[in-house]
Image (cartoon, rainbow, N blue to C red; front, side):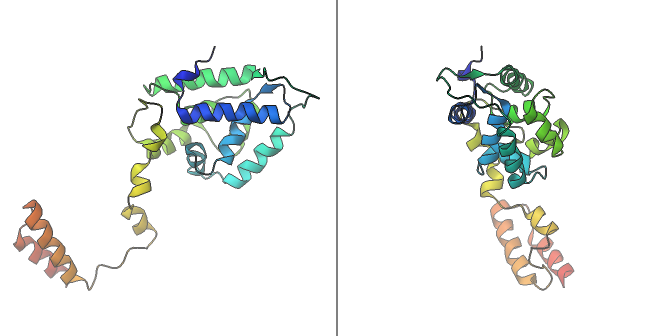
Length: 216
């Protein structure tokens, strides 16, 4: 039996949302497609951010998953006692395995996405692979989002990609040609060097002079 207490708050909310979605659509079971639909529908969520980083168009993914939902059989009525399908149980068990592989203490949404893309039994996994997702590209994108941060509590999503949210990636700006030119700004550079020299006592004034001269 799946122990939801070992899931992060965001992943628990995702699973509860999948249950509500299945009930509202009068589906007999909670399928992986229900979970993927909610991931695709959450524009601020880490799951969609992860998929967008591997060049999956969020709008196109949403439309494809929405279409997949229509293929799930609809009952004339459905009980409140709705359960995970066998595929969903397997998906969540595999997400546990991914969390253990990362030495994480809780199952987060990225573990579910990773388990989903490796699942060749569900339509959700097939959809992601059709968009070009695979384990390798997901892991590469995940490294950019969470770095070496481990999931040790139930609210890790607030910590992931903190530098990206609150900092400026000057390397990326340089690639895009959006940085102001340095040539002709010798006096500004000299002032910066003086400040750094006073605060850090690492850069000597003579070095600042040499750097200035090279800029002329």
